[in-house]
Image 1: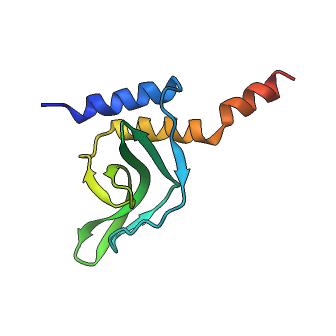
Image 2 (image 1 turned 60 degrees about the vertical axis):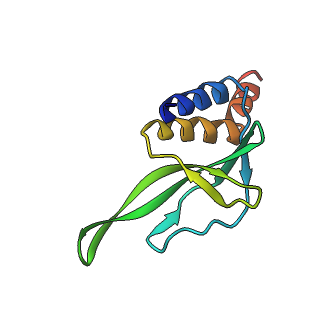
Length: 118
């Protein structure tokens, strides 16, 4: 059986090495009423498969009428209509993936290189 963590680590490594390129997209994303989107939405296409990554908050109930907002990242396989086909089981490695994806899509490395070389 394939381990999802191995897949995520390969995504991290290949994103970091500019083998994979994520894009920021602007499509509607419907979340359950107890969740809210807290980041941009990033997509990646690999071998005719499309993946979506984003950060969201969800209500963690501590009592019937009391909750705290917790934050997580979500990685999904989506179809051509941006509908979820599969949600990867949460893993802490999603945090590292999200960090490298946001850094790469921001263009900060190129900016810093140009700024510091002048």
